[in-house]
Length: 141
Length: 65
Image 1: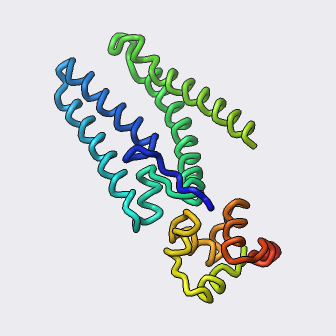
Image 2: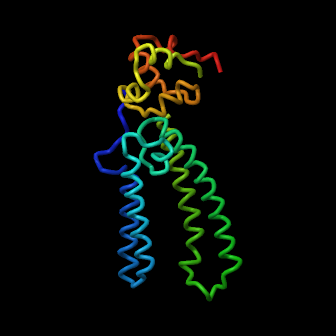
């Protein structure tokens, strides 16, 4: 029989990572005194957790599970693959637009160089992740 | 892809929920297979066929769209 794709965690591994990143971001922003951003990140983290738990109900809808990244079977995963492939293309396009916008619109004195390099860093990271993901997918057949 | 899943399930008095549970998939996946909106993986197709004591070829008509 097919085994349901559920981890032993109360949420999927992806949601556990998202939750921890949000909470860690909240802690970092709180440490530097940005309370609004810290609260926002904590709220996003809690929303991720709440959505994941809600999606794990036995009678949840497929779209609810896919949106919450809580896949129950192969069809959920296939739907998510299509959705995330579109997100990937949009992320690449938006990153290029972001890079061009920062290069053209932002005066060099306004932002430190490290911040100006963030868009190109993001674009490069996305391309590297894309390449690695393609390589792994091709190897797995 | 056309299949005999619905006919066999109904003949066996099973709900989509019960069949999904027996196979480890969701009710929506069973519904999508029955209505031809989703082609199951080879693994799931074999499990479906085994569940009803049929062969995969008896269960699914790969030539029909």
